[in-house]
Length: 194
Image 1 (cartoon, rainbow, N blue to C red):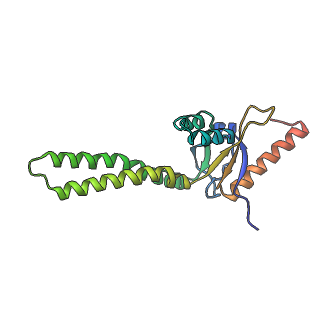
Image 2 (cartoon, rainbow, N blue to C red):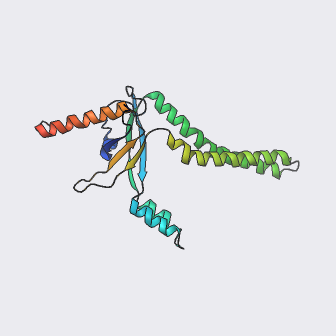
Image 3 (spheres, one colour):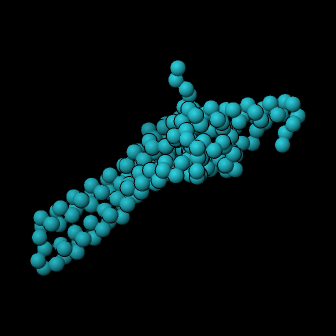
């Protein structure tokens, strides 16, 4: 039997760090908190953005999607080593972008000198393009694959908070969150709320 790796939580839980001290990624005892941001495009906005992309209004499509995006941000519990691993993964791709500009600057400086070596300028230009491409694509597509993800649901009638479906979290974290939710629900039913 496989345990679930998704759990529904309220967006306000992120803000107030209202989670059991179980690492969301490893299931071990949590030692620290890490901020996460989740964004989800509403289906209607995605469809209208997709339709606009096929018309002369294609420049409006990203604006429609960005304006209608549901967002949730806050903190999840992690171990220190897991937080460090996430920081390294994200840091590698972030560092590549300024490194690309340094390679471009070096190539321009060497190219403007009287004794410019076209081979070195070419190598620096290729390194700059590779660094920039890997930095941008890695930051957009690879780094988000490490760690939890979330889908921000639409607001439920009568509630002022978004529900967030956390995905790719450890089954022990899921169980701990569900136990916390069940305990609170039982307290509410019995009228013994803290």
